[in-house]
Amino acid sequence: MCGIIGYVGFKEAYDIIVTGLKQLEYRGYDSAGICTQHSQSLHLVKYKGRVENLQQSKIQGTLGIGHTRWATHGKPSDNNAHPFVDSQNQFSIVHNGIIENYLELKEELRKDHTQFTSDTDSEVIVHLIAKYYEGDLRDAVLKTTKRLQGSYAFCVIDKNHKEIIGARNGSPLIIGVGKNENFFASDVSAVIEYTKEVIYLNDFEIAKITKNFIDIIDFEGNNKPLAIQEVEWDIEQAQKQGYKHFMIKEIMEQPKVVENQLKVQFDFGSKPKTVHIVACGGAGFAGVLGEYLIEEISKIPTKFYHGSEFRYRKPILHEDDLVVAISQSGETADTLAAIRKAKESNTKTLAIINVVGSTIARESDDVIYTRAGPEISVASTKAFLAQILSMYQLAYALKNEVFTFQDYKEIIEQLLQLDEQIKQLAEKYFKYQNFIYIGRNRNYAIALEGALKLKEIAYIHAEAYPSGELKHGPLALVSEDMPTFAICPQDEFYEKNFSNIQEVKARNGRVISLATEGDEKINLISDDVIYIPKVDSILYPLLETVPLHLFAYHIANFRENDIDKPRNLAKSVTVE
Ligand code: F6R
Image 1 (cartoon, rainbow, N blue to C red):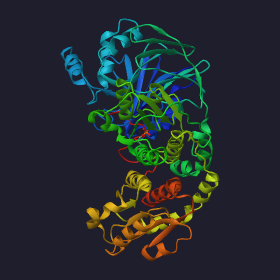
Image 2 (image 1 turned 90 degrees about the vertical axis):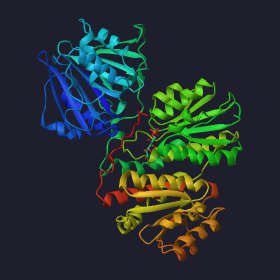
Image 3 (image 1 turned 30 degrees about the vertical axis):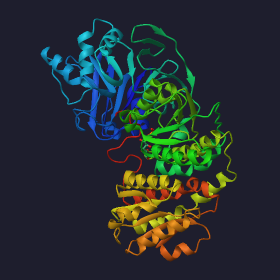
């Protein structure tokens, strides 16, 4: 939800900011802008549309801020794009988050004759800073933060001083520590090309950076230590490396991901009475799988909640329960709110997170990092696989056993060889407008994931159901225009699934089955079959995501969609 970056140093800020914004575009991509300071004045360019639009208008200066937007208040337009400047063109800000009391603040500022140029909530910040400025930018920011309600990370510059001030409350902000140059950014990917040393700002902190100085205080004005951390990955991992899209590159990286993830240790001192799993979107389907697995394997009652529902349904939490949050970004607002809610009840929290140092990771009692590496494509693939693998690891750890899966890496390599076959299948099916996905028990979680991916990147209406639910309504939709993707491995539910597929066939439905190698019978009731290797029943979900992700990818590719940046979406959802 919006990416921000700031640079102060000795190089052209514009070049560094454009490169950084491209790395941050996954956070939002409906408009972009840059403001630099040069010859004691501010220079501003901003446009509706992608970061590449900025390339037409280079501006000078060795200090600047930039923004890539995911609209919340005010539609995407040049005027609503960040950065914003005050009426005197003295200050400029970029903001990520939501200022909840912006209407009252706007009203108050209008009484002081402030002219607004946008419909955004963010613009109030720059006018408040101008109002409170008495010669020290950081003091003005401190006073401004006292007036703001909501969540924010923002950076501000003025036309005269070679410094940038950044403030954080609820939205991510890091400092990249360089040599004769320093950076602010929403995440590490924007600065990793220049430095591997970063400081993760905490909520209620304000930092001042110049090219060779960093200073942090809290909202009460107290000094805070500089906790510099080394980033473990490098720029190559965040680049496409010859692939057409990040999504397919990330799918192809999965053998390494599972190899790394299988080495992660899960330890528990005592068994919780109940496990509550909270997550959003695709991460939520890993949670649905976790619900099945933990109950089956460790026999502990387990409940899944959508992050956005958790705190409003007043969950019954006890001190001897465990709340597990699953998140790739570690910044998802609803999942974070769930962790905070759990802490109010003194319930222990465990976060399963991909992005090191992210907010949910830092606010949870325990954190286990998934080992997927940086994931840039908005549609999650390798991180999802790491998340579902972590559900097996968690389920076994809760039983004091270690989950092992010999040859898993080789199996994933084998599954990736289905790419060409699935591409051909996608060519056959990419014009359909509606799909149904079915799967039973744990495989239902994977059906949900398959349908979400098709919606997300192919813009095809797809619904997932537990196979047995089909006849309770959705079967009415089945026709030759609405294919069914049936997940039907040879597990303990095979015969039941088989009957459900027959019900579809009997109504002229087209069926693509995901089945176990050697299963000839499935051909009798399927139009197309994708075969996956034979494994223990319980392990099939770990094999099913590769073909489903490839199917969605190739369908979206045939439809010529912008796969890595699907319309209306953003990777890190830091608003409610
Ligand atoms: C699906 C997808 C989203 C995320 C969801 C949660 O492909 O990417 O549905 O899974 O927004 O995000 P995280 O895992 O960052 O909390």
